[in-house]
Length: 66
Image 1 (cartoon, rainbow, N blue to C red):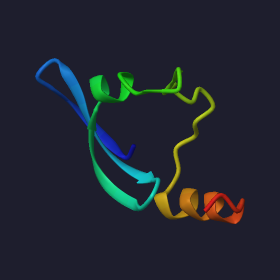
Image 2: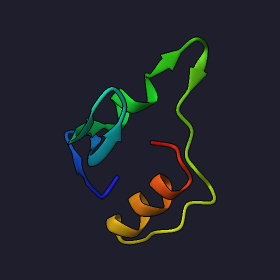
Image 3: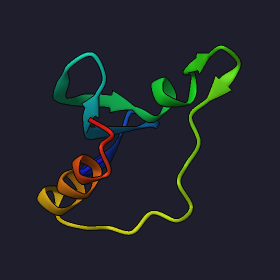
C-alpha cells in the first residue's frame, strides 16, 4: 500500500501487487479483509517499516522472491 483515504465508510488504498503479473491498482479495506484463500486471511504486518518503493522492491527481489 502506498496511500489511502476514507471513502463511503470504507478505506480505499492504492497498492502494488506481485502475483501472476506485477500491477498497480486500488483495493478497498473491506475487499482486502474479505480475502479468504484456503482458510488463510490477510493480516496486517505489525513489523512493517515504511520505505521508498524502489528500496522495498529491490530488497524483495534481492531475496530471490521474484
